[in-house]
Length: 239
Image (cartoon, rainbow, N blue to C red; front, side, top):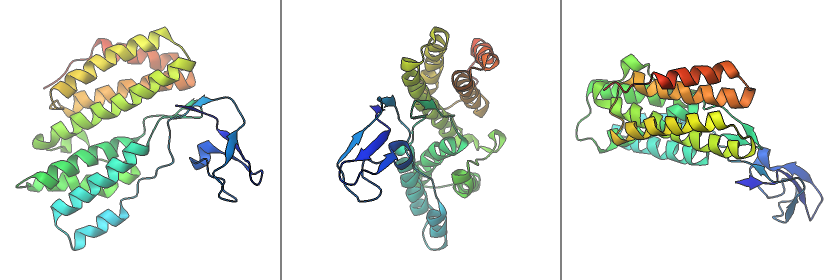
């Protein structure tokens, strides 16, 4: 949505940036009566921070299913508050967001499973241990039974980022990028139609492409744009 980022409190006159606080409440006096001073600017980013410390501590006295459900809930809330356009500036699709989406889906899978194999438990615990630092198991360590989790997670993350890229294009038009995003959406939808059951390499390739498009827009990187185009031209879904 478009908002006025520079705000002034009508009660005490304090000025602050909505982009920094994420709130129209005055940081000094607490008044909700404020007015925007600048022109409306596209803004989807929040100020959420993913912290899984408390969830990891639950492993000492709660079942794996309960911990998985708590992790999924924490990541769901984090992802809901995230966006990639901050005051008109485009942010990258970062590793913490990717890991959070993956941990959310992995947590849901583990929480409802009748039986969890050792490989699946290790995979979930690795995600839980590092997702808030943007760490996740490498592609070759994703269990076969959980690869759909990664595929669907990456497709959803790409969809969220692609949506914000389109918002950014409303103020920064680029016909070539818009065309690339249409092709990217087609591949993303195909992966979602398969419930994410594709090779981790395929899922990772989709993320690589959308990140390259983001760099091209944010930094004017023509090399990144050409690489995104080349990758899309050769994109194949590996089942």
